Length: 424
Picture (cartoon, rainbow, N blue to C red):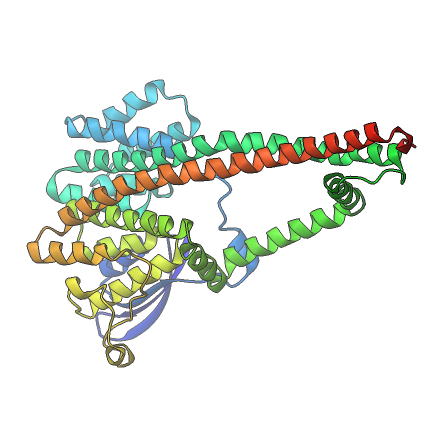
C-alpha cells in the first residue's frame, strides 16, 4: 500500500488535509470523489525514513509479465465469446502449472464465488497484479460493452513491447557472455600466469609494454583487490541509494541519459512511443482525456517525461486548449500562475502536431494511435541498427582483449627466444 496526502474541500466547503493509503493514485482519487470531496491537490507522500523506503523495493514480481499476458489473452478471448467468467477461471485452473498464475486465478475464483458487481470490483481483489492502465480499460469496456476486446487489445500491446525487450536481451546476451568468459580468462592469466613470468625472468629481461601493463594489473589485483572491490561496491551502493531515494539525483541522471549523443534520441523515441501508445489506447477505449493523462503520469518511471505530463495535466485543468498544451508559454503567463511551464526537449515535436490534428478532427485516440504505429516502425529500424552497433563494439572490445593477452605473452616469449640468458 502506498501513502498519499490530499488537500480537499468537504461538501460543506471546508478545506481539509487528509492522509490516505491505496494501491494507485487513481483508486485514491475515485475514493475521495465517492466520499463527496472536491480535490484541490493529491500527491503521493514521500517516505521520511530510508528503512521505510527500503521496504517498498520489490525484489520480485507477483507474476511474470509473460504469464500475465497469457492469462489476459485467454480471458479476453473467452469473455468476448460470451463465456461466464467463473467457468473461464475453472477452465484455466484445470491445467495451469505456473504457481504465480494459479495464485492469481485462485484469488479471482474466491472473489467470484463471493459475488461481485462488475469486472473492476472482481479484478481489484488482485490489484497488485495489474496496473492502472488495465483498470481504466476495464471501466471503459464496461461502459461500451467491449470488456473482452479491451482486455485482448491490452494484452496484445503489452506482448508486443515485451517481445521487443526480449529480442534486445536475446541479441546482446550472447555477446556479453563471450565477453564475460574472455574477461575471466584475462583475470586468471593476470593472477596466476603473469606472476610466474615475473619469477621466471626476474630483472634480467626488459618486458614488452603489454606485459608491463599486465604485471602492473597483476600487482594491483593481488595487493589491493580488497580495497578495489570494496571501493567499487561502495560506489555502486552509494549511486544506487542516491538514485533510489534522491529525486533530484535521479532526475539529473535520467536527463543526462536523454541528452547522450546516440542513446539519447533513441530513449526519447522509446518514451514518446510509450506515451502515444498509452494515450491513444486509453482514449480509443473510451477513457476521458484527464483520466488518461493521469494514468500516463502514474505509469511513467522517467521523471523528465513525467514532469512534462504533470505540466500538461495542470494546464488542461487550468483550461488551456489541447492543441496548445505542449507549446512553449510566455514567461508572463507562467509567472502570473495562469499556466504551468511545460519542460521542452523531451517529447518529440510531432506529438504536438498529432494532438492538434486529433483535437480539431475529433479523433484524438485514432491520431495518437497512428502516430504510435509510425514511431514504433521507426524505432524497430533504429533499434536494429543500435543493436548491430552495440554488438559490434562489444565484439571489437572482446577481440582487443584477446589480442592484447595473446600479443603480450607472444612478445615476451619472442624476447626470451632472442635472449635465453634472461631466464632466472
